[in-house]
Length: 316
Image (cartoon, rainbow, N blue to C red):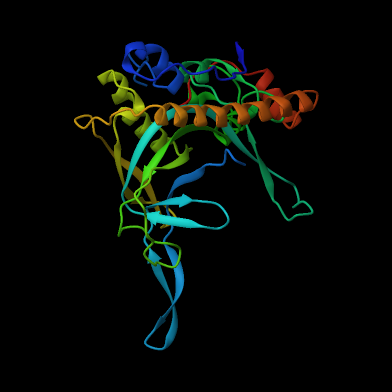
């Protein structure tokens, strides 16, 4: 099994004359042969499933009321500043993949934290993501997830299934978001003025359904022979009730392939380089953490036995 550590290379001029090379850098998947089956801080984009409640003065009485509906896109701008918008325009630049795992503590630590996330490095290649071992910050690989192809998911021992499902695949998309004037609110439900500027964001997608939906959306660029920044994606959401009664929302997309966005240089190249630099910085941190912790193992003895005795099977 190949084990992978990636540092991003310098970028050449972004245009369609060297499509395959630039598409590979951006992480545009080649699905033709794939089975169907700090100063660098970026705003974080996500779908906020829960409605946002706030205390409202209504007819002289304080009432707790819903001010932002569930299923709204939330933009985290840091320092507790959030903006919400039900529909957004997203311009992708870069796509990467990694693993993520929540490790609960037996008891909360001195800061009251109940656990921590362990993350792997980013890879740009979805095929390698499924066939290579990615180093992680704990000094291991794939955040403890066994490598391999699963033929019969139900035949696996419960402990093995639990270990595999505890490690999440994350599709991370770097791009810019444009919020429409008059449709943006803050956490108090108040309208927020926007200047129409494109905001650089990172969107980390862990939910399996959303992972596949946005994979379908981004595959349309490859099919059309287009680079990510050449077309906007119009995004809204659609929800369905879960067993516990809460709503779970998924992205609804429309890739605007009939409307081409003109590449502006050097601005668009600089934006892509900014995202690459962010990935490099992140991967460097993971590599340093891996080197520091390589002689330790966060897995339990039982989990180590599972990984070492794992037979390749296909996850269902």
